[in-house]
Each structure stands twice: as C-alpha cells, then as structure tokens.
Length: 190
Ligand SMILES: *[C@@H]1O[C@H](CO)[C@@H](O)[C@H](O)[C@H]1NC(C)=O
Ligand SMILES: *[C@@H]1O[C@H](CO)[C@@H](O)[C@H](O)[C@H]1NC(C)=O
Ligand SMILES: [Cu+2]
Image (cartoon, rainbow, N blue to C red; front, side, top):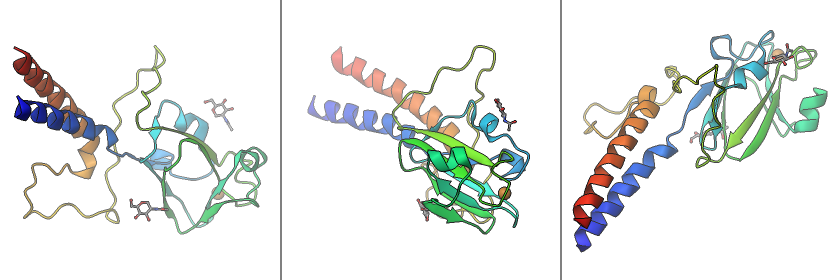
C-alpha cells in the first residue's frame, strides 16, 4: 500500500509538471515589432503567463522600452525601466500583471507601436473564448538558429520534448498521466 501511495504521488507530480511548460511569443507574428501593426489586436485571444517569453524582432529604426502605464498612455519613454535595441529582444515574463512596451523612436508609439501584455499566474485558467472565435491551440514559433541548440542526439531523447512542439507534447503527456493516475487510484481502492 505504501509503495502504491508513493506511485500515485509520483504520477500526480508528473501530471502537474507539463502545466509549467513555457511558450515563446513572437511579438507581431511575421510582421514583428514595427510600425503599422495593431498590437492590441495581436494580444487579443492570447494567454500570457509567468514563465513565457516575448520575442521582439525589429529593424534598426526601432527599439523596445519597458514603461509603466502612464508612460504607455502618454507615449513617454523617459521613465523607461528597461530599454533594448539590436533587433532581437527576448523578454522573460516574470511578474503577474500588465507589462507595457513602447517604441521610443519619436512618433512610433503615437502611431501605434505600443504593446500592453497581461501576464497571468501559471495556475490561472485561461479566460473563456468568445463564442464566435474559438482559440486555436497555442503554436510555439519555430525557433530561430540563435535559440537554444537542440538536445544532443546521444542523450536518451524520449523524455526531452523538442522546443517546437513542447506545448503540444505537454498537453498530451498531461492527459496521459491523468488517465494513468486515475487507473492507479482505482486499482489502489479496489
Ligand atoms: C486596434 O484594434 C482595436 C480593436 O482590436 C481598436 O479598438 C483600436 O482602435 C485599433 N488601434 C489602432 C491604432 O488602429
Ligand atoms: C531570460 O531567461 C533566460 C534563461 O531562462 C536568460 O538566458 C535570459 O538572459 C533572460 N533574459 C532577460 C532579458 O532577463
Ligand atoms: Cu519604432
């Protein structure tokens, strides 16, 4: 009985683990971080959580400034807490709440180059989808060559999800583990 209990606990642990898999969002999708994109629209329908990453890809006329809500509303980057340039900026979402970004190039924020991202706790359920626009499964972007190298082929690979389909595998593993866990509990109780 003791070992069965331990087994159940272990499986529950495994079942919970995939819930923390992180997602990288490419800001603006193919357009990237640039003028002429409505980032309010881009945010709509996406769920961002602590542990996820935002990747900004942009040309040399743009930068990324992290500002507070006042700076966001006023398009004022003078109080920016962080500023990035270089064309490829990854922001780790580490805090629950809304994080605000603007492009500090004069005129760009006023032209719409501003982004407010609501960040949820990893355990918070996703908001309900609007009835006419069901959410498609979250698709992590194909990693660029600069991102983490794929696992070494000599490693036992069965437990190492590749970055491109980690979220999908996580969901599959999670459901599989839930089924297994229920089976074990059922056996233990009968
Ligand atoms: C962006 O789209 C939202 C609706 O998704 C709209 O309310 C807003 O006015 C648009 N912003 C711009 C600058 O066009
Ligand atoms: C984000 O986290 C990764 C590793 O988790 C780290 O390498 C990177 O420097 C972090 N980026 C920032 C901007 O803190
Ligand atoms: Cu800009």
